[in-house]
Length: 352
Image 1 (cartoon, rainbow, N blue to C red):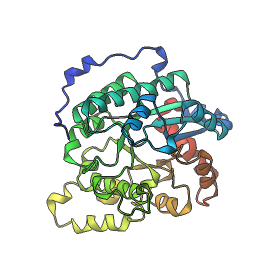
Image 2: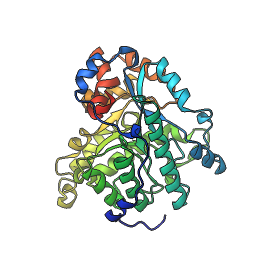
Image 3: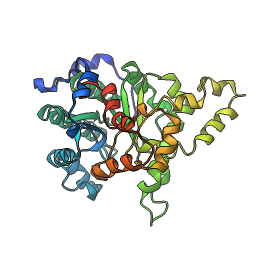
């Protein structure tokens, strides 16, 4: 990993502006009033929707890391399936393999290109897209620069981070300067699982994402809680994919570990309010989890107002998630409205 340095605030002056008035994402004056009159036809907001800029595709193919499921993905294809399934807005995020190939300049180039591509999509299709900005992590200096550019210039809705970066997770001390900045900005941080160095190809007959993605989400949640990062940076608004992975099912193990640490004063400084308190402040989305077996534990852990509609498009069809939520037997019509739209509008008023 390249040597990381702390961001010099003076370098903000080097950030270039993005042309076009269409990139101004002003918040609506009274979002909940607008929500009440929003047409039912297109009311959903998809928090887990992938996109594929040309440079990302070219680079992934050159490095033989292009995922076949992304073949033919385009904004026009997204819009068509969004319209067919009543989705007003899709918040775009980068799919695997991301931007890191062990090359700092390339990662910075890809992250900037991805973010500007998403910002143009927002400008060209008003109301249809949002964005979770890509960072060139584990390059810390470049990531701090990109946070400033994405949030201040491009007006991104939030930041996208992977659950792990090779051999460390989001509570790791190496990320503290970045978490400090995100906390100062009260940023929304959307996380997507990936495969850490420890755990790829453990069983050749089983694809890594089948088990490891849910597990890595649980690892990074534990990392944030038990490292003290969740307590130290309380203004970051974390959103975890796939209903929190396996964490809701493992809740007793998390809380047991918290109890075992009660006689350790140094450890308790990191979780002074307890494990459950930190977990219940987190937010989640429903991609690959629109079923009673995943949503049952999650809805017992957090209020439904902290759960967002997500689809994992194009890896899953949007209608799969819609049908799963409607038929899971856990959600009232008002719950569905909250998850599919109202919660998103409260978090991002401009989406009204």
